[in-house]
Image 1 (tube, rainbow, N blue to C red):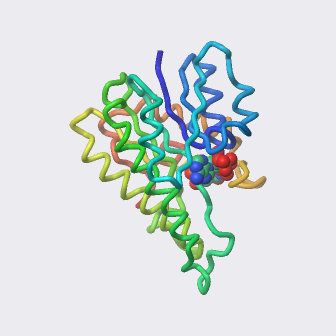
Image 2: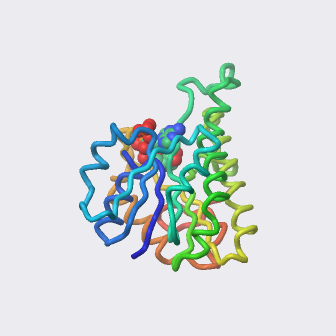
Length: 229
Ligand SMILES: NC(=O)c1ccc[n+]([C@@H]2O[C@H](COP(=O)([O-])OP(=O)(O)OC[C@H]3O[C@@H](n4cnc5c(N)ncnc54)[C@H](OP(=O)(O)O)[C@@H]3O)[C@@H](O)[C@H]2O)c1
């Protein structure tokens, strides 16, 4: 039975990944900041042991290693999905703040720590995918509107992390996919996004299902198109 570890699985895109993969018979380890409060996630529990909810706070650099001790066996998908937009004010003039560092830690450093903790278990699996939930806002080439310093820099850093992972883990047979989910109607994306979580996750799972060495280390829109770095 395939197994995925998904962070930020209590709401938004991560919750929907959990729902769709459980429906397909997968086992899911859901890494969430506050398991007690994860009511929507707990409501998905099929009651057969396939949903395992573990505490995971991306701001804690040790969290990935602590989680590793709780997850055994092969891991088909490591999905570093948890992320934050960062400080409410990221405009020029007030962007250099401690919140910038928190955003980097959550969006870029935490996924790297997860990859370091779980690469061997991913390598033991059938599918062997590390998926990084990035954003088109991390594209330097695509930035024609400025602002959002912390978020943009954190996702650009995540993209750089993903590219290095794709080189360093290639010999283990792991494919690293760097994913932009589209503009999705979630708490982060807001009500005007052009995709539902269902549409987004169907697209992302299609991409993941056809992961192969030619896709390793590439930055994909949910539509399957390559995005510029
Ligand atoms: N929605 C979009 O249009 C869009 C576009 C591009 C990229 N993305 C990316 O997609 C991912 C998911 O976004 P979303 O739209 O689903 O956002 P969301 O609805 O705001 O959900 C964010 C998730 O990340 C978790 N999270 C945040 N900080 C965490 C931490 N320190 N430790 C553990 N979990 C943490 C949240 O948990 P809590 O409930 O505990 O806060 C929540 O589960 C993010 O990486 C985001 O940058 C989204």
